[in-house]
Length: 266
Image (cartoon, rainbow, N blue to C red; front, top):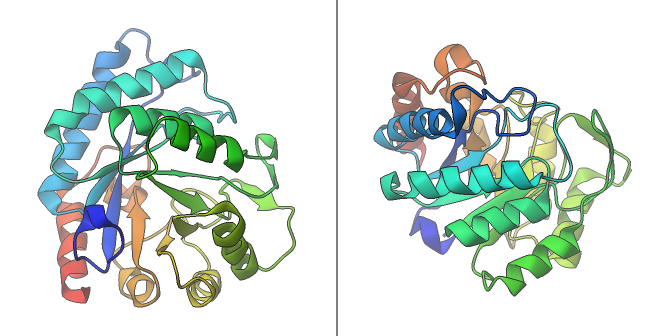
């Protein structure tokens, strides 16, 4: 069993529901407003659930350039959007506010999410500057909000960044579980939509055996068999979009084809 919210499934697929640019970010569509964001993500969620995914994760992928601390207006908007979509959900859901672990926990806790994803540990040189997340603050907020049941999924090799910690990735993963009480470890590629190194995923899966390990980026219909032969699951966004383009809407046919393959592997 991966987590209780997934029942008896041993291999799971978490699909991304990418929210458009939120209020306050440069790409936000002021004329269309928050209602357009709700309508677009609702359409994507409908297609993802019809295709048979195991869970949905809401993310503010289009809030570019990314920030390390969420603004009041964007956090409020993302909370409202997730809350508006909740009645439509038939599967467990999670939240990821890029790249703020405290905001992710806050939104997830108050909306009733089963899990949150973020960069919680490490030190990185990134496109956004020096990246130093505060795992302790996020974990303590989870406790203070009474959501100890909400799982924290640790992405340990950040996209758009290079780790300044020179320890092997397997050791960093094992350390995150030991010192920071990670509920799951996620292994990423260098950028959204690009796969993690197979050797990185293999090494982490071999080193971490007491919590689930997921492939976090670049999973597609051609590599899912290899991924699930090692990991307990994957998080997938780009491959489910029209033409495999991160910024497009979800393609229902692509979701169905992918999940049909997954069913043969479970």
